[in-house]
Length: 154
Image 1 (cartoon, rainbow, N blue to C red):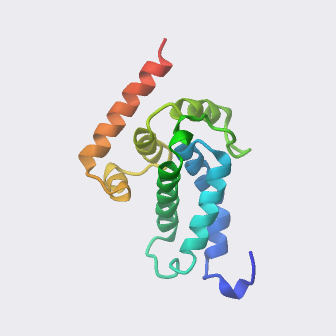
Image 2 (image 1 turned 90 degrees about the horizontal axis):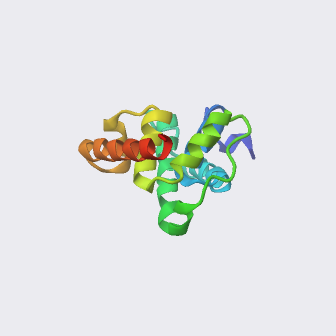
Image 3 (image 1 turned 45 degrees about the vertical axis):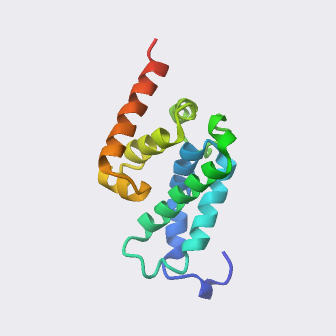
């Protein structure tokens, strides 16, 4: 990862520990494995100088990844309709099926559901991350789950 003297303390360990999970998170949010890897790599590079000062470095990078995914959707409105192309090789087979269904949801509903049930964030944490009210998160989650039920149930 370059000259070890230029990387903040713990940066490499954080990268090694969180990279695959963050790529999976970003893949579920964007619908693109290739875009997800790029977003995660960019997030780590953008955050590297601030990680020493961050109270919770993993959460700081995760927020950068989520924001990168939001930017991806703003730049690529058509990408929202695509199905997932690649999840990390280590992903369970059920995750591939879930990702295909999630790709059919509107971006904000998908984002809330992935952050709540995959990243295990609270409604308050999601609201802070998405810069909206907790009631909006509840509403998006409720509508997203209702949409998933109609897609999954016979």
